[in-house]
Image (cartoon, rainbow, N blue to C red; front, side, top):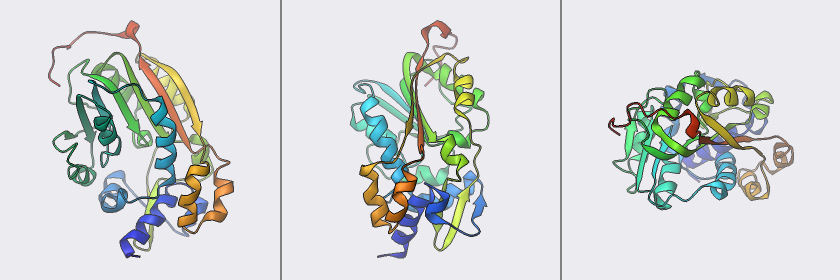
Length: 264
């Protein structure tokens, strides 16, 4: 087994829970530095949180056929690639990490669909997208009202918005966003948000919450723990709400058609 794969295998569980990796002195870095270092191994398999999130979100997705979709904080393009494969007419991914976007750009279905941009300053005109997703990234955004306003502007009335992140209860129990860079445990600094804070930030911008899910690890994720030789931690990990999933819909009553003719 290569050293690179060993590092990636540890990273998947470091992202899940403090007790799964138990680094004695984890090294904390900014999101910029963290994803620069993590990007080369981010897409390697065996991440229980990504598996869990996909398992819950995929059945809830509306039809993508002919739609314009936006992947906010797209990283290496995991969701953008899936949405394009599901029939999206136009797919765009944005992220601030140049390193993550470089990896995304190697994927043929989404190459040329990527923009380096800040999610609180979206470079699009109004009412351009039918669907948006922000996956496991909200804790990298300090100002939730700013991102909610930007998404409210760029989404069409009636558009669906999916947001997922590490569940606040998991964060309270010490779960952190992190990975292993060789033998070094690295944690990425985040700004956790409560469920109430998220809802109170998106509602005034014109988003109705249609679904609010607390996803827990289950049997489909158990083989990941087994493969990582951490099977003994699975039962305790599955008792904690691991991923928060919010499905919002852009409220037509709050729609303002200002700037509707702006560029995408």
